[in-house]
Image (cartoon, rainbow over all chains, first blue to last red; front, side):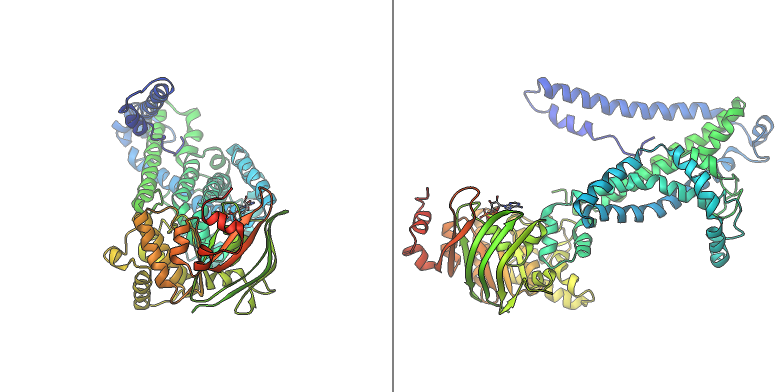
Length: 328
Length: 259
Ligand SMILES: Nc1ncnc2c1ncn2[C@@H]1O[C@H](COP(=O)(O)OP(=O)(O)O)[C@@H](O)[C@H]1O
Ligand SMILES: [Mg+2]
């Protein structure tokens, strides 16, 4: 699901309906926006209810019975201890991808919006938009066919030199069907969408504030620091959240690359350590008995909740310094 | 802290379009020079060439020379960034940085030059700059509040405080009061009268009374028609310009008989 919140159609229509002369297009607009808002909320509620109902059998049963009835269900685990590592793996993959992609996206977007000559900037802008539209399975294919075969020496090198750091613990697996490879492929996958959003926001920096910075004797980089980045902060966060949403729900790329495991493990160069919720659902669903499907849906419910929580956290960050947001 | 500017035979182009032609003038230190003229005659364009702000727009160029105390601002090796630190600018619409507090706004330019300014020096500078722009008494209790929360007139004085905090030689103002109410306008005019003790001030205004009230010298620009370049028609002491101008066009414009 998309991680952008619905437009605030409700708020707008409320103020409109208070006014007299609410006729014609205005009335149509009010109805459309009210109903769209309601529809989005209803869809959300329907999804949540569906997930809870379908997941209930698995949630209400004990680990013992689950283990008996589902062939791939780990021994001696309740549904909670089953979902835990999957949540961990999902978050790890998504955040690693985000940490790799966001700074790069901001840099590329800044280059396009404030450094590149106009012609080049236009061409690059189109290119980024184009890349953002490529289906994720293509990135997955690239990851498994082109990237994974050559990246082992790099992972091995890092594991050998920085292995004392938990994230980089060796020995690196060969072939590198590991979390590090997944994170890079996910990062490449979400890079265009974050870049596209950032570029759009950077270009909207008010001329007024750019000129204010320049008139104070700002260099280009100082202009970016004083006028562009502060203005674009909430936009950057929105872009990153869009990327995070994609990374959280990404199935094919992870499924194709990662050798799964169900551990709470930070070892991103070792195989058989982690698995993500979405990839796990895709891997197990075809041969799952009814109760197994229910258990998988319980993990889906967890993904749903995570996505909502991430979204709300992002909104809270954006809202925190609202007075200073420049929306005046 | 105030220096004179000599402009010689300045032509200004937007791409192939000659916007301003053949301006020669001297701007005296510690004085207020006003630019007046019908809109579109190139006052803003010319003003912005005085601190190379026009270079922000791609395709602009100038021919001729602008010298500050004998140093050509367009000479080889002169950094426009350095020029703008010497020659500050205040814009038509107040433009405090919206993400910054009042205090941060005042210090915005200083932080670019001197990153390691001490806390107490910074506090002193904030106070002296805000006093310098007659804003201190109004904001001293809420320096950490957003600058965008002030009234338009206060915002404009905040922008002036921000400009003088970096101690420029010259202050350029492009219609600084045109977005303000009459009371705020008066406050800014009083401020300009005080600032000229320390700075060379150039102000563009479309308000004749304002030019007469605040300026020592007045330059009248005019344009022969659309697509033609703007030109400096005449420049003299403000009292002379408003009582007995040499040129007929000046007299017509000032008396409102402008065709
Ligand atoms: N960014 C620009 N690009 C091209 N032409 C411009 C630009 N800005 C101003 N001009 C032109 O330059 C001339 C002078 O404009 P301006 O300096 O804004 O006049 P004033 O400030 O006296 O009203 C006008 O003909 C205007 O159309
Ligand atoms: Mg103008």
